[in-house]
Image (cartoon, rainbow, N blue to C red):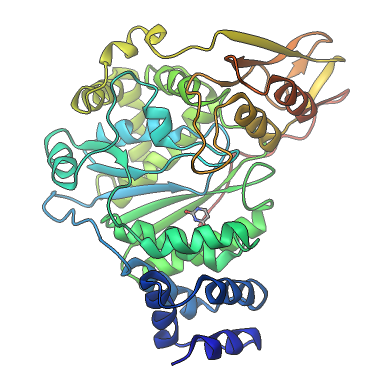
Length: 433
Ligand code: URA
């Protein structure tokens, strides 16, 4: 078999068979196929697409390219959750302890943030002492003991994705639906869960700018998951404006704690309950999502979810006193207010713009190697649809010396628009697949 012929076949609109996909992925990971040939095939796929069968074969080949996590010694159905990436999306911080408090084991491997989107692992590292690196045995032992662990992805999990993603990133081939689906689902399969709930974001701050594109991606992932034995559900959720009010690692941890304490912003609480209920049903702990939601609401009010978070923080070396005294979480020295120039209704609070402003303050990484400032970020004071008066503070930028403050101020200012009449309100949960 020759890589040249595979590229030619896809370039001319052909359908690759499983052996050709396996040849490509195997050679790409071993280094016997040069990057320029993989890059050329990625571009051909970008223009020609992949069928459902090709996407499923690609997912399987990628999944088999490295180590897999075996969670079979843990009792029950292990349910994972994945978000396609948003701004201010700290749901995992709320969901993991919330769902674990309902008796569903949560063994979660999370990533770091890149670009305008954040990563759960960075957020957890703003808890003093919290350890995200853990070997496989310790990870499984902790889930066995307390029903919950959230750690950084370690080892050689899906090396094909690392290789392909780095090439997609520099060849303008990231936003191709089959490549995204195979990337996400291969990692979910390798992480050892038996079921997964996918939160597919749609809107200005997401990969998928509209609900139709997000739905195509969600349906594809649900089909692939189901065909490969992973029980998969998906929700399409709005990502036009940031989720909650806080954007930035330590700021988001504070907001997650407030939510676990029974408060927090309404959209974050709602999304956590909706995804959580799906996870509890997939795990077989409730028959319906309304029954599951009731359990979860009770655990938020009774403090059981917060207690589970406390257990996890202690087990992973963090200081649980942060839950009683959020002042222990890093705080930025500088605060800069962004004010409304005119009064009316907030019609736009652009997630992408706010995410980029937070990145310029130091909260996010421009490249994988960039250092981040855990305390930096943006706190919103208004969300879309709310009334604002001229001169009222719309957002506060949190920054330390070294931040690109001028750029962040400009990006944040441009993210807001105010109009005279109330804008139409879109739903948070757009659709369930
Ligand atoms: N998230 C992933 O894990 N992979 C993609 O390709 C896109 C988003």
